[in-house]
Length: 92
Image (cartoon, rainbow, N blue to C red; front, side, top):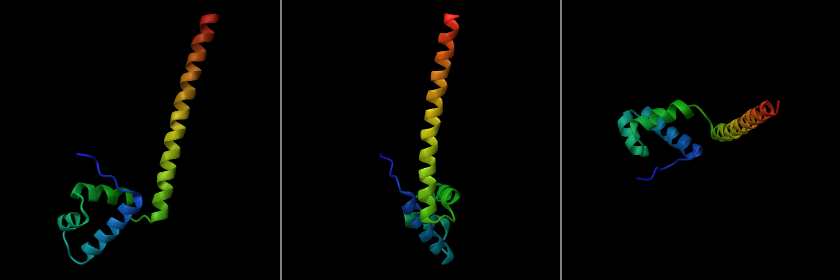
């Protein structure tokens, strides 16, 4: 079964819908079913995106992508540095 992904904007909209339903007296189970996710997913989303606006979620996603790109760069540079150290020790 393919994983169905939601954008941060969609998640925030679903969380807003869930909050409205909860304020009307619905249970978590009913709300989760209505928005089409499991209870666990609802709680995970609420933990990660709760209280966020759409522009904040976009910025968070951009920062996460930039962070992963920088981590890969650091790993590549560290590997290059280690290779150069080994090569220089072999010449000495």
